[in-house]
Image 1 (cartoon, rainbow, N blue to C red):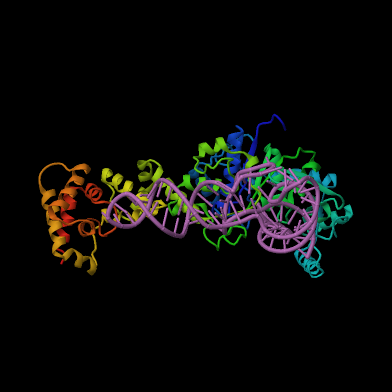
Image 2: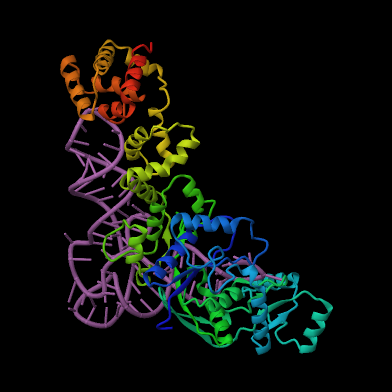
Length: 480
RNA sequence: GGUCCCAUCGUCUAGCGGUCAGGACGCUGGCCUCUCACGCCGGAAACCCGGGUUCGAUUCCCGGUGGGACUACCA
């Protein structure tokens, strides 16, 4: 497969949402494809009828697209190797299982679930690995025909060799060897006629000309089955790349129950896709230098399979938060403002004044790590302020009143107030009134912003504008 | 239980025989500043254990321990 074009795929099952581990897998596939000028394919693995959820495919595509991890071929955009939804490929699986059956690499099995359960239970009790005992492995042709004719429910199993061992090379793990005696006669076709993952993915990966299988480490131990299938068909075996798992804080495989695992939920909370992607890229991959901040485009350039880590990586929310804040502060203000707009609309805040809105975002973004938090840090620029008794007591002091009155009077004078003018005004006020430090700033900030702590006074007045500032100061002055 | 995978600060990681074991998050001290936040500067913090190989092992090999994954007619 030397000069072949690189083709990789992300093959999620449509369970309703995109798992962050899935996004990481998708991202690494995507990055490798871009880096190698190959193709990134999206394939839907919906062979489990029970787990398929309506609308899940659309949602998956929407989310993937939102993050920028864009596929070149898939159910929505098509391609030369479709259909890209497995439930629409039943014919293909039927044809291929026939070949396996004819060649003796697969066989019908009529064991029912009850017998299988009992078998496994006993094996477990005897501390033997739970595996199919091969009862139907050597059924005569007649017996099979008869059972089929009688309509006995059946599955089709892989006739996996019981001797020898399978050795293969994984790009991140190196050489891996597994004894064939450890490998089960995996079900290939379920009693409902649908293929299992193992069968469908091998057939599709071959038919779709996949060159590198990049997926989670949980698949590592089933590679021998897959290799045996490729060889049974006489197909070339693709390269394997098993990614380290994403972990909970307790180092178990990342799962819900221990926090959010759906990409949608992070997006809903207002994490920027830029931050999420950058953060996730660093879970299991790292460049040789100390660089950690990358745009998607930069990742496409820097990525390589060789620098993928072997050990699992804990999904550390703290670091994601930091990165979220970093991106909110460093990306273009206008862009951040646009991205944040839906959150303000949802909160019912009128952000019609674009100039003011931009100034608000420019200030508020110093305080947050997600878009949704921007709302809470911007509220006081839009809503009328609510004072506590303690606030009133501070505002009611003589000195506070003098300060407020002074600024009200000054702002009331005709003319335009630039931020520089406002800084000058503050300095003059301090010297004229003979009050400084917190004694000066706290009442003012409280009156304008609703809190003693926050942005500096010129910034506040500049954002609010002269009229609103005077209004707030006056209200505070008469707040008793 | 069996098989496989993995093992550097709490977390993400750099390291590919000789380094004061580097960076980032978090924590922490300071600076900036009226305050908060941002930002900047500094600090504490790691090579799982035991054998080898070697002049010398975090690094190579073996064993142990620990953790994880898989062990379905789920993917």
